[in-house]
Length: 105
Image 1 (tube, rainbow, N blue to C red):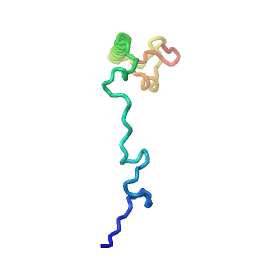
Image 2: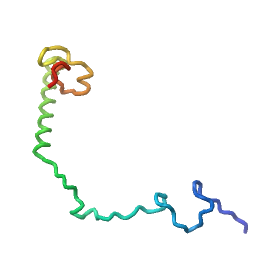
Image 3: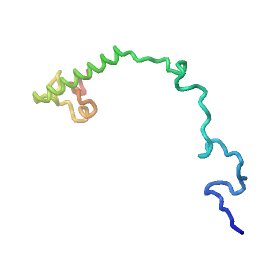
Image 4: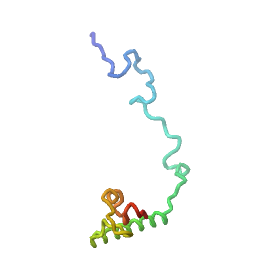
């Protein structure tokens, strides 16, 4: 039987079968991680300040409530300081903006 085996596309035709493949090859498993995922020493040292996170969320919620109130009143796009139009670009960037570009808060 004179059957010829074609090489895999993208592989070197002179590579011997069974030869170790270079790192990054699809058939080479990734190296084992030195630390186990359950290892407490592998946890990040950063722990979020939940009081700070809650405070920021509360401030954002207050800003959204205030913006919705201004929308109901018809003053959503007016600066709270001078009454000038806030501008669509500014409101698109920050829908809770309360002042025009001349009066940043």
